[in-house]
Image 1 (cartoon, each protein chain N blue to C red):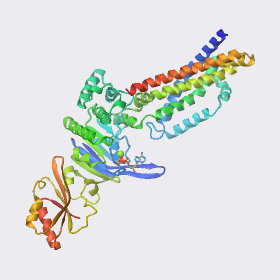
Image 2 (cartoon, helix red, strand yellow):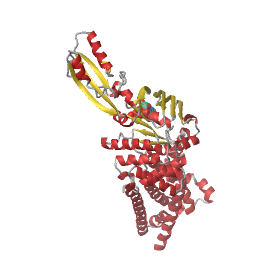
Image 3 (cartoon, rainbow over the protein chains, first blue to last red):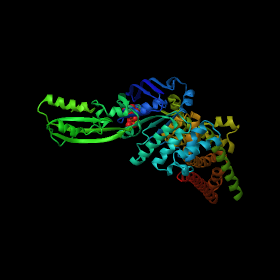
Image 4 (cartoon, rainbow over the protein chains, first blue to last red):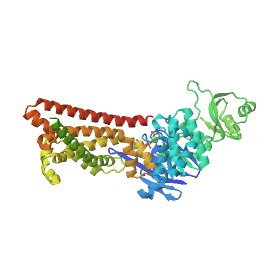
Length: 329
Length: 216
Ligand SMILES: Nc1ncnc2c1ncn2[C@@H]1O[C@H](COP(=O)(O)OP(=O)(O)OP(=O)(O)O)[C@@H](O)[C@H]1O
Ligand SMILES: [Mg+2]
């Protein structure tokens, strides 16, 4: 669906050169909700803006449904943009137009008849549950309502792709949840491919089936979301995956093991099994369990005291036998 | 005297009305071009922007009274004479265009870049962005800016009147100053004050109506 290859973006400002994107390769399939996460300044916005070329890539290619976006003329590009919706952190609604006219805006650009526009806008208003706000101006809407208008506007031309740049970052947690579930429902119902930019792992966990981690213009990890959370992280990705950390005020007595349970092992009584099998003391330092894309992922940080390295090897082997991913800290 | 005042007022109104029309006709596009050719905007053209900006600054730095005399040949070329109401309109327009262009420029810069970007992402071309996004979004500011420009034109028109352009200024100089008719002087001042007040109120009312509307 979307193939990005060797994409780079270089900004030069006051003689300074900033390499915002440095050789990005990414493949997004139809129907994916693809999350791209990274810290501030990692290049997330640059990346998503290169997809519809509202930022001109410095080099590399973006191919959407077989069409090389980077090779299109201005005119062809404008045409193909109607197939790519976009929503923004600050909503970017026209303050001079009502909710209805905001949603009708992309349709009017395409010179639809007012009768068809009315039909489409009415159905979109229903989808985002804003029928009663049709004639209201954006300044009277809450953040969540504004974003719903943004979503309706982006979907008006029935695009195959929806780009979301920090679409929930200006919203409170509850509204964020509502918007995310709306996005998820719509993507499912309409078969739209979503590219979701965020700096919050919660957003990724909630809706993205795939994820790429962006750091300093490079993708340092990518894959299926649930899998990424149930494998051993690299030093760079630890931070993003929310690995458990032992409280600093505890002095370390034994070996600390970071255990990750996924579907197979999350429900099994593994710790009591350990206690029955080994005569060693075990302390639980921290733990949590959550559902990521319908997969249960549990994490546990324990401290085990063994008399020897060999014994520790046996302990680790025991956990691995139970399909637990073990990381020695 | 009422006769004189009425005639002079009508002349002033005529001068200001025609001058305003031409000022908008030329100044609005100039202001738009100044914005869209600036760095990072929808039609970035650094060289053109630089040249236009320089010309506008140059014209704005010229005192009106000097400009008026300086462009007499140009005025002759256009209206065939350099005296009278029609001849006064030419320097008025020439002086007001750069002023109005700058006002248009600042009004349009106020339009949120994100909104322009959203329109671009929806496949709007430059013309559509100008006419369907930038101008409607900036309309209240543009109305207020136009009001200021017209008020300026009223002031300038009085000056133009002093050198044979007719209108209120002419009246004030000829009767109020040269013939020491203080009552005429005072009457002209009152008329000017009323004109400016009415105009400013109208401008404010229009702009507010739009803004209140958008907040509702
Ligand atoms: N127009 C620009 N001119 C110069 N440098 C830019 C420009 N836009 C972005 N940059 C730089 O490129 C880098 C990546 O920026 P980008 O906005 O893509 O990051 P981001 O991941 O979206 O960050 P944030 O989470 O803060 O939005 C940053 O170092 C930024 O300063
Ligand atoms: Mg960003």
